[in-house]
Length: 157
Image (cartoon, rainbow, N blue to C red):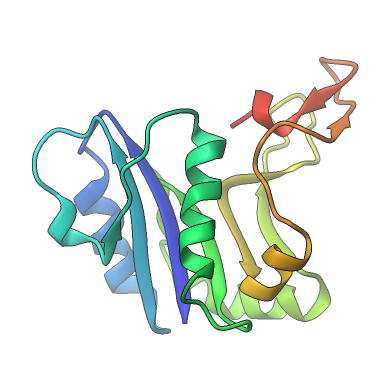
């Protein structure tokens, strides 16, 4: 099972677009757990689960992951997917190949001054690995990039 954690903020613009692309391109069983802070309208019934939370993006992603872990099997996958991100082809063959070699498959946003940090706009990890690593999108570990001597994930999300 793939558990998709997505955060939509103050706009419903991407809700139907994202869900439509997921339906068309995800061929493995999945469920979508969402946070819809400030999104106008009624969209709760479009998701498998909606989690109410306010605050910063990293904290919402961490909350969604903790809720997913309550029911996920160890080999289930957690996919973090920004509200305005969606697959245009089935991503699972590439993801499974990547997870055969490492514990995390993610976008790396080089346009962010050469950042090498995995970005939560699209990342996938096994539930067991998120738990084992004590996964956390909050600021913490710092690394250098071309524009800042020391930057942390919380400064990017």
